[in-house]
Amino acid sequence: MPAVVPSSLPQLAQPIFPLELIDIVVSNWRVPEDHKTLAVCSTVSPEFRKACQKVIFHSIHLTITSPSNYKSSNLKLYDLLIENPSLQTYVRCLQLTIGGDDPVASTLEMFTQLRELSLAITHRHIPEPLVASVEQLVQLPTLEALTVRSKIPSRLLMLCGIGVKRLSLENYQNLAPLEAWETSMDTDTMHAKATIYLDSLVISHPPAIQTFIVSIARRTNQFSLDQLRSFKISIKPHTEELCIALAKVIFRISADWLEQVTIRITGSKPWTTQFTLESLPHLKYLKLILSRQSLVPLLCTACEILQTIPDTNVVREITFVLSDGPVSGHDDVGDWEQADGILMHEGRFKELRRVSVHFLDDDPLGLTEKDAKSIIGEVPRLLAQGLFFVHV
Image (cartoon, rainbow, N blue to C red; front, side):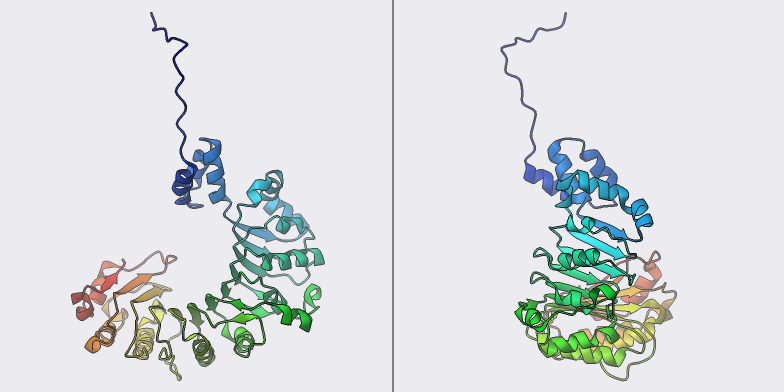
């Protein structure tokens, strides 16, 4: 006979996880890697569902094309956001590609809490309502980072909100004339704009950005590099002299603040002009990204850059990142002995704590054990001090 439980006994309450603990657990998951885990956990409770939705909708990619293609590519996402307005507020990062003349602009008006916007415009004929929506996005007070991945009208940069601290001009070119953006900002509007103090700047198409950098140096636009802490530049063949000239301008403006510099170098010919870091007394972190297809000459160029660091410095970490193809054989890994000699010369780098070699995540081959041993064998002094690391 089953036991009888008296009705007077109190019922045990269901255990409740603190909301803060749920957010901490779920925030460690990522999309798309943990998408299935997030989908399952979102069914546990309303609290888990809300926390999972914040991660799932944190970053989205939206492509606006012609009206016919728009429905097929974005209909599900569009309908989901319309039916569930709370999801709109979870979107913090938006990668937006405009490749058509779709007049639908209401999709963009949903995103009022963006922190990061990545923008590419690949179509010239854009309706005015969509133009207005894009301009509203770059002016959002919550926006902290803007990435430009295509030709865009300079007007869009001039409209950036004061909250933008990180600017990445990956393939920036001023696109003009563009019908819907032909009207330029009037002088009074420009003078009324508050100064935007950038914390981070990335440039990878220097010929097109030359005018923009010069306007910053001359204080004729609202951006300022006076408090710049992080700078990244990609130096491609035939642009070396221009890149070096632009870097000098940027270093002169931000010398008292700049702590982190990343230089991506491609090509195989030696430079006629030297890239120098001698004007950066507060540099702490240096990253050099080198193409593995021309690693021998590029490593020599990297060593020349290392030699320009002032004798009195506070450099703590130097990272070499290898990209664009496999390294095969000892002769292809470059002259790391030269780097060893520069970095360990008479205690010049007194604050140095780490020198590491990585490979880009999109390189499926990585470094072989043989490559790693070849590199390690050429840096005995760094290795003896426990400063050198190779990530295979």
